[in-house]
Length: 244
Ligand code: PEP
Image (cartoon, rainbow, N blue to C red):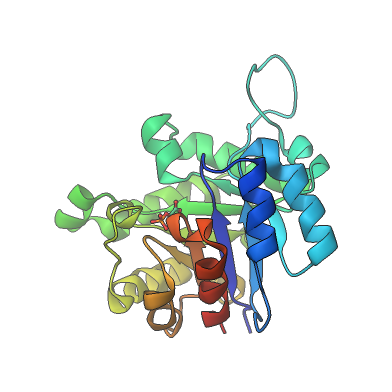
């Protein structure tokens, strides 16, 4: 049985004050899924401290360097994330792929670096609207996964999370229908072959409490990666509660 997982991606939002208030407001009573909060880097230690005191959730980074250390100004390594209390790290978010030109090959290196240090990568994959309209959704996600498969052993997928995030649904208020999402999740699981049943596959793209239950009812949707709605503690907790 795969345990459901809900991850919050705060992106470049918040402040110290916001984070402190968020955890005062966050009530995870009745939540049985795993929960991960991915704040901006400067707040990782604060969130890790909250996680230690409050319990019920883990901490994640939003990105990492593919390099272990050295002259890479502005970059943050996997071991630094671990040092700051992170257990997870998002890799290949579509905003990194599009605004910072991250290729699938670079994302694969980051995935490898994360696992090598003992972090659990949350690999984001998904098609643009244009690619969907061209009927290329499955080809795009398969290619994005293949880049990672080329640098890891099959078993390493068991220590990772995949997040299917159609780019056209991120931050737009447009969600894939549960059936649309399910058919891609089923395909992703099949791509994972013999380890597919053991890998958590999350859906991301305008998830909120109003649509979470219908998405989570699908056989291959194991939870969500949540952007905008994760900035509201009550709304985020309601999404977590829906993941059973
Ligand atoms: C995301 O950033 O991963 C995301 C899914 O954002 P949103 O929930 O705002 O669409």
